[in-house]
Amino acid sequence: MTVNRFIVIVLDSVGIGETPDAANYGDVGSHTLGNTAWAVGGLSVPNMERMGLGNIAILEGVRPQTQPTAAYGKMAEVSAGKDTTTGHWELMGLHLLQPFPTYPNGFPAEVMDRFSAETGRGWLGNYPASGTVIIDVLGPEHIATGKSIVYTSGDSVFQIAAHEEIIPLEELYAMCSTARGILRGQHEVSRVIARPFVGSPGSFTRTANRRDYSVVPPQPTLLDAIKEASQMVYAVGKIEDIFVGQGVTDAVHTVSNMDGVDKTLAAMRERRDRGLIFTNLVDFDAKFGHRNNPQGYADALAQFDTRLPEIIAALAEDDILVLTADHGNDPTTPSTDHSREYVPVLLYGKPVRSGSNIGVRESFADLAATIADELQVGPPPQGSSFSHLIGAV
Image (tube, rainbow, N blue to C red; front, side, top):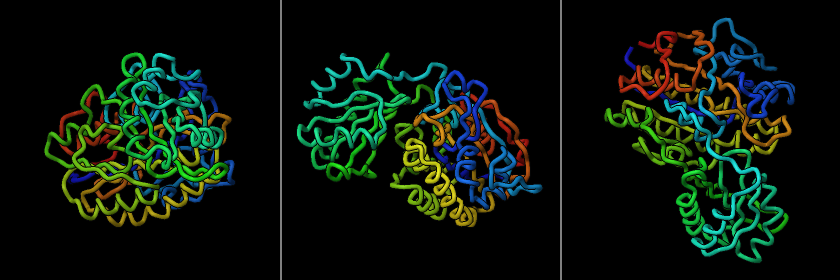
């Protein structure tokens, strides 16, 4: 059967166990799904269970299936790093051999002085922090002085937090664009992120007006190959930001996981073009992984699982649905940063031979090579297709 569309949904940070090189990243023992399941007394994801999630790894509350409805397996990351940009780029066929720089001691004066001069505002912070904690700590001074709050994390990010009534959104976005221009060469971080918030001291709340300003991919990815073949690349959520629009034909942003599901469903129903619908659901990572909240993480997984029947019902006979992730973020470990883990992959649809075990893939890019095979577009820079294992022809 000729495949017309792939619907790839990235469950952001839903890793499935440490990779062999986890020690190099300080992530020995990380297992986002496994440890979350253990911490809450078992996951409630019956639809993913039927697809074969419990066949990939032992997960409390998720039973292995004798006849899974999907093809299943897991993928390791080749690229150096464990951040969002690196993971998504590799999913679309691009390996990065040099990691993006990180700043455990904050950004150097040469960066911060230029940032102040070009934005016309001073700054507060400039150290690794939890985004919710730093606005509680520095928010009152930010309101009093109008200085922006700059912080980073264990990931390669330059984050700017600002109260929407102190620094309007358009100014905040312009500041991020300025920072993106400054952070080149040796300081080329993977993302500059706008982190707007509202409220008053003691009750600050981050809003859904976040924006990501990523590095431009250094080589064409699968998205470019699909677009060049005059096929659709419909980006949902922060996908457009991660690829800086490169290879994207249409895009829509989201405010939550459920909004992302709604907009994915709308695209599935309205856009029957050949190609790819590519969705990121960020709440697992942003709201629960980084905040070390295993119960919230488990609840978000359960909530997504309840929407799977709608997604499956919206599939056409020549569609393939893919569920995967871009890295881990174990909410049970002391770290609040991403973790170096395998990511699960479940493939479902009429063209897929249910119950196929694709094993342990050496690279996330194998997914890109498989999609390229099925959509009959040029191969991505990296990756080995597993099309022959899932029965899609």
